[in-house]
Amino acid sequence: MGNLSLPAVIAVCGDQGSANAVAPVIEALQKEGRVVVQALAYRQARTLWSKRNLVYEVIPEDLTRAAAVERLRQPVAALLLSGTSISASIKMVESEQQFIAAAGDIGLPSLAILDFWTNYARRFSDAAGRLVYVPDRIAIMDERARAEMIIAGLDPARLVITGQPALDELTQWKSRFNPAQRQITRDALGVAADEKLILFASQPLAALDGKDTSNPHYFGYTEQTVLRALTMVLDQLAEERYLKIVLVVRPHPRESVEFLESIHCRNIRYVVTTTGEVRDLVMAADLVTGMNSTLLLEACYLGCITVSIQPGLRLPDPLPTNLWGISRAVYNEWEIKPVVEQMLLDEQARASAQARLLDLRSDDKATRRVTGLVYQMLKLDSGN
Image (cartoon, rainbow, N blue to C red; front, side, top):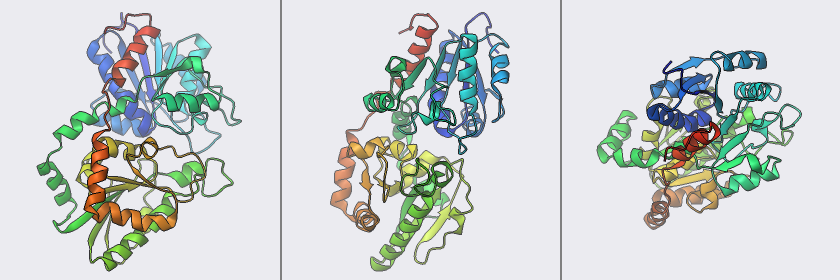
């Protein structure tokens, strides 16, 4: 458990995005040795943290507020550090929310790390939409997130712009990935030299955000409608342009693969895989596609040509790289074919996209800013 004379930080995560954002902070705090970190994980955080060799305690998804209070007192914590997970059911209170409420009950300072530009109020609200699970501070990505969170009703005094810690490690990841590793990844999928490899980053949108306008979070599309449209387009391109195409679908950890595996294609090879390192798959692809997932954001930081397919979008586009002009956005179904064809086969368009990607860099300091905020809240000096 470490030196219990040091302040104890309890770190809690469930979803993939929050676990990826909080993990570098836990690792940095442990390395610096100025606090003791006790990590608590449920859902996808368990798998992700295990891959990073982070030691954690498993907690239930239906953890109660009373149980969270008891855990914060055994031993007595000095600060709560949490992710921001989202449930498919509005009636379910996420474990991070229970811990944030529990911290408020006992006067413990709390800090949450935001990992993406969506569902700001939903992450901190009860079933009635009341912002009752708001921590003392929220580490957020940028000015856009701050402005949108204020509009959503969050107190600006609680918002601290730090950047997204999960992006800090992408520079090193990109530099380590070489042509040999790319070939190994493609060989593992059976992709021949004359085949085009397209990656589709799926998401459980139908389950989380609904399938129609009866759900206020419905984007105007689901992973099912987008994947059907994409496979139809690729079947057409393969036939018309005499192409050999392999479409690799990467399910989200919270997603059922039943629908994904039911897709049948006429002219392309279709593969659903949950194995292998996902960032290796991204960098081995000739084109990365998807909707609005964090993986598309990471693909851009990794220097990969990326197309975000969001036909019928009825909400603000959450993917920042679309707004920056770094990834190519498609908002109408009829645009899917010409855009995918261009970004896959037009060398001039691909070169232009690659040039824009060169300008996208993280300053790799988000983790340091969050640890500095932890020390500030604990009334320790920043250590910088």
